[in-house]
Image 1 (cartoon, rainbow, N blue to C red):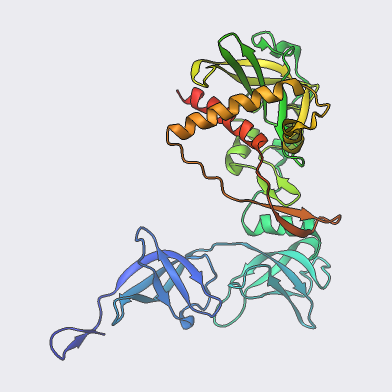
Image 2 (image 1 turned 90 degrees about the vertical axis):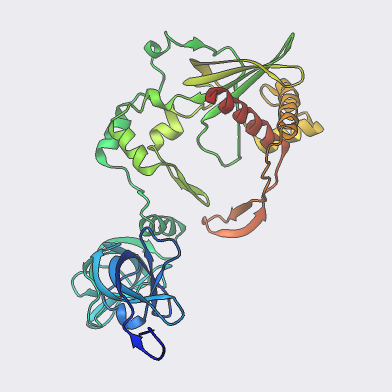
Amino acid sequence: LERHKGDRYRLAPRKKKIGILQRHADGYGFVRVEGEEGADVFLPARELDGVMDGDRVAVLAWKDSRGRWEGRLERVLERARTQVVGVFHPGRRTHVVVPLGQDKLAPVEVPRGATRQAQAGQVVVVGLTGYPERGRPAVGRVVDVLGDADDPRVEVVSCAIRFGLPHQFPADVLDEAAAIPDRVDPGDIHDRRDLRHLPFVTIDGATAKDFDDAVQLEQTSGGYLLRVAIADVGHYVRPGSALDREARERGTSVYFPGTCIPMLPERLSNGICSLNPDEDRLVLVAELAFGLNGDETGADVYAAVIRSQARLTYTRVQEHLDGARLELPAAEHLPLMAALADKLLQRRRRAGSLDLDLPEADIVLDLRGRPEAILKSERLFSHRIIEEFMLAANQAVAR
């Protein structure tokens, strides 16, 4: 009801709204209305029978006495999930799977004969065969047994499934990857600049497994000549191919502590598309000329072939710059890189660049792959070297 005139009341106008249901652990929920920012509709617990968190629903909504939207459920338009990941708990008549990390989802019943021989405490994937209704829980059958709940590998896979991250490659994608050679074909080099004689190096974190950029710097009579090489993935992943389709679907690699779900099969991401030391690799190069003060005086972008001389780490490079004088390949070029990077950094700061130097966390794993400590990541000037060189390359390409 709403006040109409004087002491008169009338039924509040009702509107049909469509949106995504967000359930609360206490039983009630809100519908985030499509196309109406901040107009969430409150649904009491009694209205949520048969609805799961994330479902797309239609509701009939009205404003209460305080001007806030509330409503009742009309129907479910689209289910948010067809699978649930959880811990298997056997019972006498039926079994139960308790969803992992999702306190908004009620347990799912699994009938006898639909368990795939899952054992108590194992993490399983349940395919839903029936959704909750009239006070009855959702029903499903076990479609995959992932393993023990305390296995870090199981945690990664279960997390990927829960958030809809593709963690396995389709057969056609793997077939295309297998057909790509693991060495550069000599026929692919003839129309590229041959820079294999130059001392390119990669500088990455100690745990990095794929290297997609390498740098090389030399002093010139007028300043510096910087070359930033990026792995030419497009040479192998052709538009419209199964690899291209899968990469577009994934969008990015997803990193977990100690492991990663790659955007491309590891045969490519850690192989022919990674600038591994002492291996010929196809690249795109941004060649940038700078004056002694760090001002850019020229730029060129072209296809090339390089051969990285070393896989360096940020820590080792910093130790060398700090005076340890380590026996590193191409070490004589590192002070020159630091000098140019500092000039580029100061130039950006003078131009008003925003530098979001925020603290980050490093997760330390034990031998089983489980986190045992979280430490503040140390920010080194060696990180700055690569950041400044990559920024300069990106700006040159953008122009």
